[in-house]
Picture 1 (cartoon, helix red, strand yellow):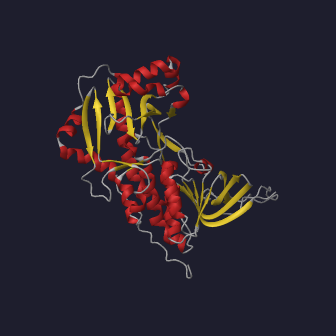
Picture 2: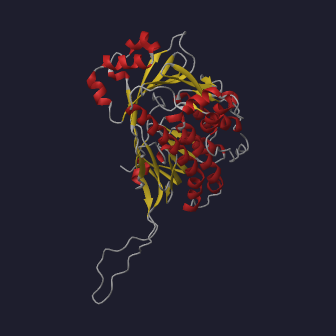
Picture 3: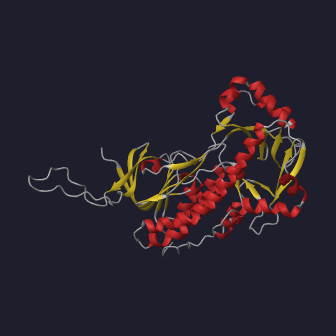
Length: 437
């Protein structure tokens, strides 16, 4: 049976932050767009959900900030850490020139549901859930070379070493109702660091070695717990605590590939290590009843040398997987989406060819801030690895002490993390409503 077909201007693969924001902005500009999400809903725990001031600025530019702030979330204006028992402050967001000078902690599914609700107000927006992309639709850019042997006494036709790759004209997906072909002038791959469309297009990421992984889990938060302690450093071991209202989202930094050894040492030993690093957790450590409550995040940093090919553009984690350091991943993905919409909305609206020159402009705009941020993350990884190889530490590093004692310096990491490198401004307009609506 032939698969069903859908025709649109832009097909966005992946309903994460990059994909949903791109779909929303393009639909808002009056462009038909279909977003494909392979799951039934957005509920996935331990996903990036730290919203930076740069993201609040985007909401303000769209006129959505007031509605957005009504979605349940927590706000933090200062980050601190406990280093061998000493509490140190290291980032102050309260002085940023932003619509909301704070970090927002909002479950990613709530963020995505909000964007879906806003995008669905535009008739050009379609979200297809439970739609799993399995391949690309392609059209040859030149007639295929003949396999017929040349006639006797004649030469075989010459091959063309400059033959362009086939143009990607859509995707094939599987749905509960069967196969579905989505034909589009442009495909945007926003389907994460294991991107299906990236692999199908033959785009291979370049990996940066990462010496750590992270174990994520939840522990309840008690009324007398410290307020906004972010990191706990104890003799080379690091436990991240992210405030989530009535619970802590906890992340234990471990050596790369070290989870199996930790499990072999036993759950009791694991719980004991946690209470040594962070003693106030002792009265709720029993909540970790088995290993199913502990989730492994395999930390990786990678990037595509080229984010695009003929008819396809990758953004977000599909173009550059980020470490959880700084909680920047979701915000960088949103910045990618804004830049993509800013550059491509007019050609898409006017049915102009989406050339590789246009797609290159998106990469040129976003590659530099991505690489700067990844370099920062890689430097932090090396520092973590070095400390973990040491024994007892005499005291906090000098930069921690300087940040703690000089309030003005605490604005620097807040500026780098909160606003990011080359923050984007929404420039694609909102299309006027159709007559009679």
